[in-house]
Length: 117
Figure 1 (cartoon, rainbow, N blue to C red):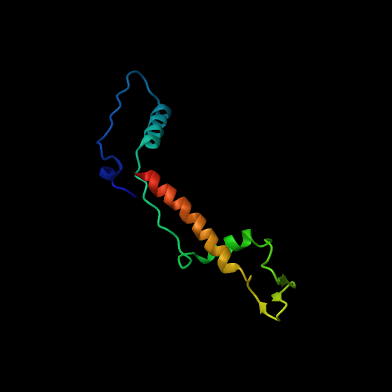
Figure 2 (cartoon, one colour; figure 1 turned 30 degrees about the horizontal axis):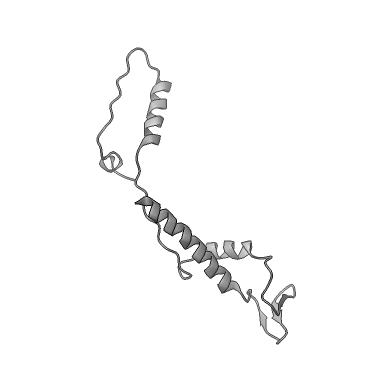
């Protein structure tokens, strides 16, 4: 959490109210100024296949669970199989799916980082 000098680099704002102002109005003003406070956004790091967490990997693969398999591959209910006798527990195109997601995320990261400056 930033210190007060980091959170308010321009100084302190003092509001003077006249008349009777209830606690509710003071709290509303405090919330208003807190929302208006300028916060520096940090640039995001680019993703790589190695930087994906297990959770991210699982979510991406779940999104593509029902995608068509590469030519020659089928799912028999427990394993992915092909006509050459190959059997796999994981999708044969898993890496391609993950790399496509990384590329798409990095496009978003580039836009975010470019818009910061």
